Amino acid sequence: MENEKLHRSRRDFVKQSTMLAGGIVAMPLMSNAGYFQSVDDTIKVAVIGCGGRGTGAAMQALSTKQNVKLVAMADAFRDRLDNSYKALMDGDEGDVKERVAVTEETKFVGFDAYKKVIPLADVVIIATPPGFRPIHFEEAISQGKHVFMEKPVATDPAGVKKVLEVAEIAKKKKLNVIVGLQRHYQTSYRELYKRVQDGMIGDITSGQVYWNSDGVWVRPRQAGQTEMEYQMRNWYYFNWLCGDHITEQHIHNLDVMNWFKGAYPVKAQGLGGRQVRNGKEYGEIYDHHFVEFTYADGSIMNSQCRHIKGTYSIVDEMMVGTKGTVKCGAAEISSKGKTLFKFDKAKENEPYQNEHDELFAAIAKGEYKFADAENGARSTLTSIIGRMATYSGQIIEWDKTLNSGISIQPQKYAWDAPPPVLPDANGFYPIATPGVTKYFS
Ligand SMILES: NC(=O)c1ccc[n+]([C@@H]2O[C@H](COP(=O)([O-])OP(=O)(O)OC[C@H]3O[C@@H](n4cnc5c(N)ncnc54)[C@H](O)[C@@H]3O)[C@@H](O)[C@H]2O)c1
Image (tube, rainbow, N blue to C red; front, side):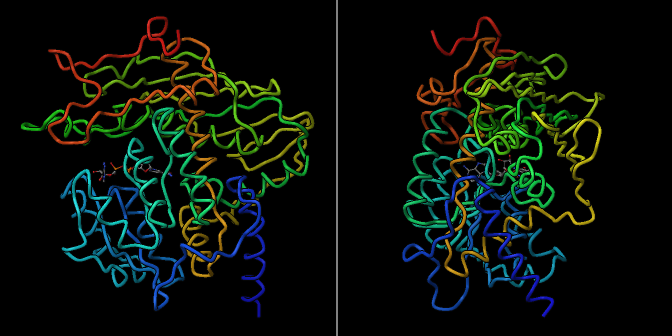
């Protein structure tokens, strides 16, 4: 009885919060086509990109209440795929390993591996570096599959445009799409969002968002690697693959302000550089960015992101409204020093698991509830105009950028093909320079 009540209220909450999640789906809809239609109730999953997140997302999918089976795996590299398979089989996470139905015949490697796994699945998990997201998402939707894809969803304006087009097709086909901006699936953020929508802080007039940290891994060059293989292994430091850390990580915080405001910036200007992390192993990305984003109503989002060891770390969002302030990390809303709402952190959920719980529950019931791709693409573009602003030192406008056709992808995906950026004789890559780098004449 108690359980049923809990389930019912959870269902109701999910219905409401879905609309909040991406801010896109008008109403949950029943689907007639393109849905999970196995003869039994098995929901077949394929994973593309078997690294840290792909493996984690696969485990989460296999830990849901539905009858989910992992049937196929794709990675650019055999060793990455093998490590992931081993982690799934060796882990002590519930009955995950019993749900792994991947055979030697359904493991695929290389740039084309995604094409081979998508036909085998009902749901596709896409967790490669983000440069590939537009082509993988397009293929999954064209084959009528539901998608869980990681953020960001592109690294350049042309990629964002493609994802927006495919998002429309996904909506027409009523295919559920969740983007791994997990704060949308986190209880504290949903509770804060609800109150901000109800007017507790009035109209948002400014915000501060941060991802300041030590930085991430480096994968050193190995003897015998082609330049393409080196960049694919050390992908974080190449923009065509990663988009710089303002896109790869800071998107989470930029996205929160977009979500709470219900809008996207119209322009950005800012500054940044690579002051400390400037060796050749760090490719072409900056180690800090500070961007001022302006929304159509004149409100401002100030954004900081930094990858420098030994500096102050903060990953958070705060927004100021005409009647109060919301601090997301503290999960608190206040006005003139008085607390209006404080979320009880003991009630926090595990948002990564919740993304999959909600996705697979909807798919099993034949419901169309999730259309996150459009918001994922627009929050990705927010981070990209930020990067273009710090790289150029110019004002970068949203519409002009979205319609610019700017692509930083290679002509060809092959191990012996040249990536779009190449090192000089000393192994250093060209670095964007404000005042010199230009995107628009
Ligand atoms: N939502 C979150 O909090 C969160 C956390 C971590 C990572 N992520 C995102 O997940 C994605 C992957 O990050 P990660 O940390 O797992 O990186 P990773 O390097 O551990 O894994 C990426 C995997 O993709 C593979 N790959 C590269 N190109 C491929 C291609 N064309 N086809 C198939 N496989 C390919 C790589 O070989 C690697 O195994 C990134 O977009 C990242 O931003 C999100």
